[in-house]
Each structure stands twice: as C-alpha cells, then as structure tokens.
Amino acid sequence: MSDRPPQDVRTLELIGVGKSFPGVKALDNVSLEISSGEVVSLVGENGAGKSTLVKVLAGVHEPDEGSIRIDGHQARLQNPDDARAAGISVIHQHFSLVPVLSVAENMFLGRELRLGRSGLMRRRAMLREARRLLGELELDVDPATPVERLTVGQRQMVEVCKAMLGRAWLIVMDEPTSALSTRERDQLYALIGRLVERGVAILYISHKMEEIFHLARSAVVLRDGRHVGDADLSTTTEADLVEMMVGRQVEEVFPRTEARSGDVVLRVEGLDDGGLLRDATFSVKSGEIVALSGLMGSGRSEILEGVFGLSKLRGGKVEVAGEVLEAPSPAALAARGVAFIPEDRQEAGIVPAMSTQHNLGLVWTRGRGRAGFVNPRAERTMVRSLIQSLNVRPPNPDSAVESLSGGNQQKVVLGKWLATDPRLLLLDEPTRGVDVGAKSEIHKLVGELKTRGVAILMVSSELPEVLGVADRVVVMHEGRSVAELESGATEQEIMRHALGSAERAPAEHIDKRDDAGESENDG
Image 1: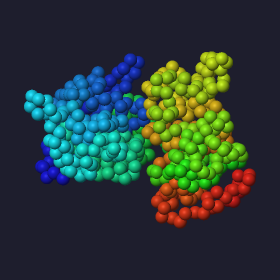
Image 2 (image 1 turned 135 degrees about the vertical axis):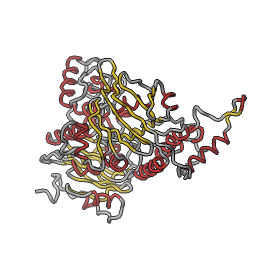
Image 3 (image 1 turned 90 degrees about the vertical axis):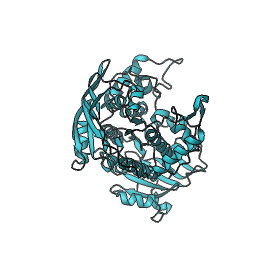
Image 4 (image 1 turned 60 degrees about the horizontal axis):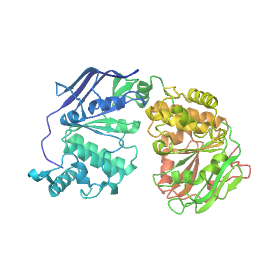
C-alpha cells in the first residue's frame, strides 16, 4: 500500500438537476453531495432515474436545469472527456474491456505511453506502471494476462485500476457484484475499503440491501426521477429505506402465499449431466414452490437446464405429470405445459429490438396461426390483458422492450410463458437485478400462479428470497441434492448443508413420497 499523504478533500455537488427527454422528465430537482474518502449509495426502483443521473455524471447527458459544482466551482460535463478530466469514472455492469488485450493494455487504453515521434508503444513501461498500481491496490493479477482469461471478479478489479490510472477521485459503481461469487464480492469490498483510505469517493448503486448497509454511510433516494431524501444508514432501517424508495410500505418483499398442494407434477431422480451435476433427486407438487439453494457452482441452474432439455443428461430420470421423458427437449417440455424463465433475460429471455407485444406473444403465437399468419386482434387483446395483470410500465404494447426497466423486462419474460397457462414453472434467479418494488410484484404474481395449482421450481442466490417464498428447500452441494428442508428453516441450516458441513442425507430421506405424491409429514 502506498504511504503517500492523504489527498485534499474533494467534493461534488448536484444542485436541483433536471433532465427531460421527449414526453418524459427523467430527473426533476435532484440534489446530491459526495466527498472524497466516503461511500454514498444511490438507491431507487428501476426507472427512478439512477441511470440518467449516472449519465449526467459521466458527461453523456448535460442537465437542462440545475448546476454541478466540483470543489465549490461551477462545472460543465458536456461529454465523457470532460467527466474524465474532472476525475469522475463510471464502472458499468457491462465492462468496457477488450478481451484479447492484456490487463496492462486495457488499463492504458486510449492513453498509451508512446516513444517520442515514432508513436511506438512503451509496452514495458506500461507493464511496470500497471504492476505497480496492482500491487499498491493489493490485487493479485498479472498485468500481461489477456483479459479474456480473467474471472468476472478480476475484470471488475481491472476496471477499477483503469479508473485509478486516469486519476479518478470519484468512482461510480453500477451493480458491481451482480455477477460475482461470494469470494469475489468480498474481495471487491476489501478493494473499496482501500480506495476509501486513499481518499477516493465511491457512489455505489445496488439493489442488494445488505451491500448498501455494509458499505455506505448514507443513501441518496430517488423515486420517479425525484430526489425524495437522504438516509443516514447508521440510524435508518431496511424497512424505512424500502418505504422511501417505493413510496409505500413493503411488509414483505418476498411474500408467502398459502395454497393447497396437489399431485406431483415434476419428479427427478439421480440427475447426472456428466459434468457439474452428479446426483439430484426431489419432486415438486402442484400448488407449491420448491427452491433449489446452494453455493455458486453447486448445480442449481444445471438442474433446470437438464429438466428443460437445454443440456443433455447422462443419467437419471425426468418425469412430468406421471410421464417419464426419455430425452427431454424444450419443445417436448413446452408441449407438456412446462415454462422456463432463464437467469439471463437479456441473452435468453427477450428479443430486445422487438416490441413488448411481440415479446409477450412469442410463445403464445406458436401453433395458433393459419398459413403462418396470426390474428393480430386476438394477439393484441391477449397482450393488453397480460400488460394489465402484470402491471408492465409503461403499459404500451408498442414500446421496444429494450427501453423498459429491468423489473418490467422480467415481467415480460414471465408473461410470454404465462400466456400459455403452464402447469410447471422453472424460475432461474427470477428477481436478479430488479428493485425491491419489482421483486415484490414478481413474487405476488408467482404466488397467484401457485394458488392456481401451478408447480414452481425456483433457483435463487438470495436466502431471504428462498426462505420467504419456498414451501420446501432442496439444498445442493457439489452437484448433489444433500438435504430437503421444510418451510421455517433458517439461513444457518441451509448454509451448513450447502457448505457440506452437515452429513449428507440419504436419498430416501430427500424424497419420501408415495405414488400420490404425498409426503410422510403431510396432514
């Protein structure tokens, strides 16, 4: 760690900032203050104005109203170069790294060290400087390594180093842990601590309450483009912060819905994909939610992919509504009323360039047309009904789905399958990257499906979500289902099994059911 003296305290102030687009006031009288050496969280639902505010700080959008002051002086951030010159750097969810270039080359991208008039790059000098900065920040990364060989967490660190090399004193981090493992998240937390010690200010954006309260001293809360207040996180509760964000009390972000369970809809035995997944056995009944829990890499998502036929199974059995499927495939499962909501909605859930209507009708229109044509009036009626029941905002069928917030995109992903009236719903991280209000809405919708008798198998990395909504929890460890816990289990119990520190439950204890699908403990 460098023993340089602390830098003078620097400040950034936004005063009454406003920004409008055709038909939309994205920011309205927003104020914010942050000083070097502190972490401030920027919170709000999707669509609250956070992204627009970040673009104002990055020089992408210039405010229509209000002012920006840096170190007490008026500043104009008319373009990204102005922002960088002012010492502001933004690290987005999607990294701006070139995979085939080395760590050092990425760190110096756009500001390469060159040799006189020849223009030749001083590669050794860049490697030396990159190695010095990496060492100073206590990061164990070889600057000569191509970025494509790094983990997601290491790439995050390289982005931070790029910012520091550009002499940034204010770094905006937008959902930085959304794709990190627990270990990588802890490493990022430690790095943030070292940056703060060096006098760097961090504006931290996250939907994860535990991160906000762990890292930040205060939170700036936006709602519907307006600044509704600042929260001192040492005296504010999570419930108080949620209420500020959504404008209403959210008693339970993950509400439990009671329903009568019925027959077994899905039964899997000894699932083995020849890779990560080695032995998974459990069942899901109509009218219940079963959650798959475990550490990253335990085989949770692989179960959903194997059941839906997205990956080939080497061994085991998949049975849907009493019918054994010899070779599961997406077409065969969809024909039997199985819907799959993938983890990555951008890659596998939506078609971004298409409208909300066409995304919602993607599955519904199959087999409904004549000679390749679908009745547009019938599709429009179906879509308007879905938009209303899902509370998609804005409620315009013709909106490009890529323009919607993350939570509303997720509702569209759910909606396109709900239009088919499924009997079994496979959910992979259904609320990842959405705000607390959207999480609550999505789980209320899932709860309604449960009361209608839909069987739901869910994967979630959030233990509060698992414990809040699941009727049973199947815990995975190293590709095996090692325990089945009833509603009321604790986080400690789940983690003990997930870490492999509890004895593995025998297979017959994981799924004791008779042909009618009733548990020994039922009734």
